[in-house]
View 1 (cartoon, rainbow, N blue to C red):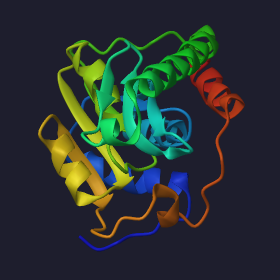
View 2: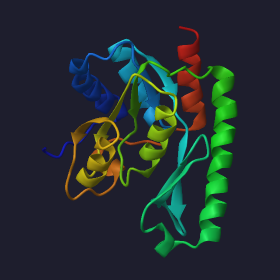
View 3: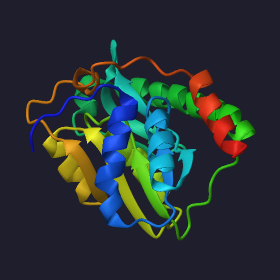
Length: 212
């Protein structure tokens, strides 16, 4: 699979939608992991005639390097740690950081659900998307929460991710990835424009969907 670069999140989302179209998903619920992936979810849902929503999961970052994932926590409180987590951080740090990320999840849940109720997933076709994956921890946490609701079909759709992380996710769900560079660097390195997405941006997208 050749390495691909994307102009921005919307271009990546349109390309993902084209790759997803042949799967024949029926009125899919497209879930973005806040915050950046909500932009992708909104575009994919519009392209495929589906419904956009969010799935809340948060990375557990390493001490002094929060972008380096030691694991992740899902909205229902399930914690997923990478095998190397214990060699980098002690149990007290992991417990404290997990608690901090759960506070972020609860805060976002209050804000986002005030604008749009959670979309039921039971028996539905579901797409989970993110800007890209690195370790896959956050996606794994999101996937577990989604599977617990017993959807009919789940597809993970990402623009880019390292082959080993994508292969691990394929053991639990269908995966559509546009690029899998063996020398993966960081998600943002594969976008020409990769601006920050804030809570207000997510709320605008949710609010717009709520009145459609």
